[in-house]
Image (cartoon, rainbow over the protein chains, first blue to last red):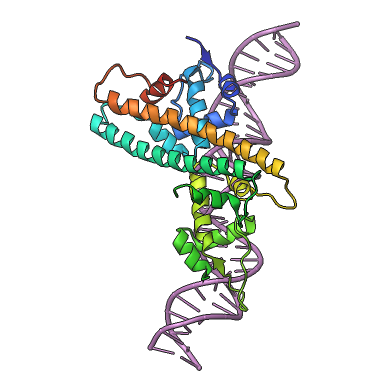
Length: 135
Length: 135
DNA sequence: GTAGACCCTGTACTTAGGTACCGAGTCAAG
DNA sequence: CTTGACTCGGTACCTAAGTACAGGGTCTAC
């Protein structure tokens, strides 16, 4: 099982080295084992983990929320029912984001067609298109 | 056509007064007409506008991107083709966000069922569930 | 006509999420 | 066995997006 130095991990994940250390401090990455010298040795799976963090951020999740997602598991500290409740809460949140995103997408599509067939144009065509969708 | 003071607008939109002024400075809200006294008189439509800004932020759009969405329109400065291109770019962005949200939702659903039927649990069940979705 | 709530501008502070820099130690290729 | 790239921890700095005064004017209900 190969491991990565912090620089390799950062390069592969497309973030920078200090960001990796920052995430480690924040608890988003597990503290990796160290060589004698103190150099960190990251598992390759952390590349995917960093990728997820980046994409989740682009969806408006805070690092705290991302941490919660990543720590959804059953272990001595957390019961199955507990995890289940937290998963449901996240599902609700995700569902709301999806709904809003759909509205925005519909509005954009409407704009895309109407901006050629040029009907009456209000103050803000985008918002007009947006609430033409079922608010 | 009734108008709102900055305090009324802020209250109705669920943001605070300095935020409204901040958005005005950033150009996300049009500069409203003023009374003799200098008091701003906002149109009611700005309530919806602020609502959209809030929801779009929760989807990871920056204020700059939100400004671009709100200013999608054809006018003397922008041709129809220009708007069309920008709409398409936004649609691409929105599509990517949707795809990632769907993956997250699927992963959460899988967690919700698997956390009762307790199979083997890896380091991070959530990420395991996530890439069990079509990457 | 005045008290309390509200608004004005301007400037300063805060929080989240990084980024940069420092001096010192480590690694690997020639 | 040295040199250039990399890593270490620590501290300081930065940007986006607010949020909080301060000092002064305005509104409205009594």
